[in-house]
Length: 511
RNA sequence: GGCGCCGUAGCCAAGUGGUAAGGCAGAGGUCUGCAAAACCUCGAUUCGUCGGUUCGAUUCCGACCGGCGCCUCCA
Image (cartoon, rainbow, N blue to C red):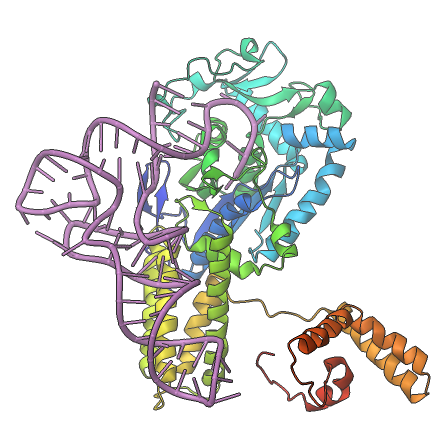
């Protein structure tokens, strides 16, 4: 598993439409740029499916011995952020800041490793302006009749290679952009959009030598990635550029044109794209209204481990349909992994040495590596993990044990823990709730001591407000069914001292 | 219309030119005071349909049916 770089990792490269060995420019370093969220609103879990596949890619690269430099952009200026800010009656960054914060919270909830650098577009204006200037200087960009700056795709012969544009025909009657007649070629795209009233209203405008305006959508990724890899590594070529499949055209196509048009060097050696998350066969999106955010799941108490497992059980280049059944199945899988983990931890404490479990551990790590090196085949790796769980459980069931649990625990934690991160979250007690209960129990005990029974009853009532009617109903039902009353009924809230006294340290089990 | 993707057991989902991983659900069993957990056993003679290539196809080719995505600011 600690494969020395260069590892045997192969990934599908959209540029060639083939699975190819990863070939970083200067191994063991890998520069990884992943297209991040547009912070006009909360990201939905379809967005996060892409970020989760990238998280696995990142972790696997690191596990394989690569020294990864991971950059993710935050699109905080584009049509949608401007429009949303306008509707909210706010300045652009005032509107986007809370969503950026929310994105980070969601990222942490889903246990996605933070990128090394996050690049908000608004903080890279000088770099973007410099890039446009350079493109104008090199004659591949021009100022249109409407005052915006466009990229001239006919000056860039390889335009369309990523999306195989040469094989396409434009749809008859396809919509014609309003800026159509300002451009030399209808397919030229905007690098810099001339300031308009809406952008001015929310403060989304910057002064530039070629006119007051704001960046086109694609510009930021080129400017920021080139700036960051130049600063960190002194290069102008990314090793991997990743994103959702919808970004292939036009976004990534245009990024290539802008970047290579300016540097004359290959922009990215490997392009990887993740498929969509669907809902009943249709892509999850804000527009369709069929979305669910990460915070929705968190509020429902869904363990992030289940979400991760759910996504990792499908290959990143296959669409996944998000259903309640699939989520429930994943939750159950996570629970089983957790049970197994606890069991292995118990045995691992006292069992070193080798034995069948040691062999199973090696198999697990080998199978995982083989699967992930083959175009990040997470489903196959997850299958190997469950194979391991079953085989190891069988071994642990045997009365005559031969040892090796410690090794098995190590392997299991490396794969299910550090790599996939799909072990159940230890359910942290809610401190506020615990305090509330403790306070009332204490208050009641104190009141009883001082024989203030009215106060005692009041404190106790708060604890049982909700349960009392059901207790009463239970007695009624008991009588209806002519069940003889027990001699003693013992409500748990009345036995706190006894329970506290008897709670054995480390005692596990269910109610 | 162009480009691309998909159709595998009840649900989800890997995979391969040589006879179908894994997960969840279900049934039976072992263990257990009863449970729970765990383990064992069981399920696609079959991989949308129809043809073709082949000794052999779920896997390659063609047609068709069904679903989906992109085609200028969608992860």
